[in-house]
Length: 204
Image (cartoon, rainbow, N blue to C red; front, side):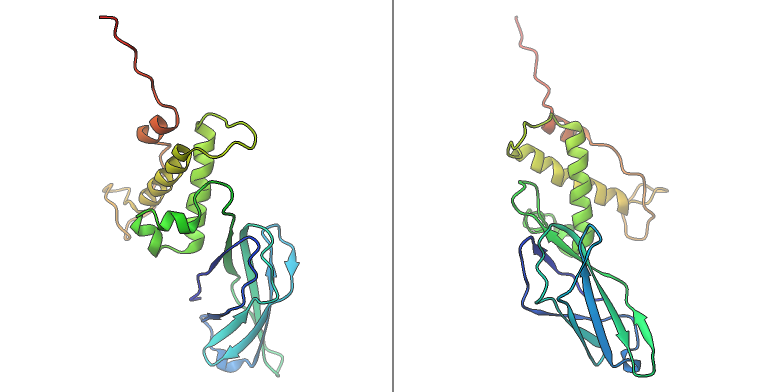
């Protein structure tokens, strides 16, 4: 499906999204849809209409009230009783008040690959990198703001995870034709950023 779209928590989009499924839509004449929150609960407010080889998807009745990965489920039908469910369409709903990177800030950072990858892939990289950082970094007091070095470490680890996934384990060289390889733990630069090693003063 040719759609990537992300929102922020609280958004209620007014635009119509065009979805092009890998399906011969000439055999169907109607479409319906609903949205599913990250916790699995279903909400209405989705309208869908077939337009030649694509589906016009309106989310005007949906409020993205919680952050996370939502999914839009679409079913196409015809008068003869035919029915096909399309693959769920992931929509990333971001929360910009956490202090961590969003899709937008990661892409604005100068990381070229972040611009080209899907919203879902980038979201997963940022979330797993955040978990990595929090597992190693000194614990923060409750409600403390996220330090800039934690945010920088998150982006560095996300890039490392992405690059490791592109490397060929046989040659060690990056490339889209290679297989995925095991992701390494935080490298020394990220560790130094999170837990700086203080030099021992000289008494000479």
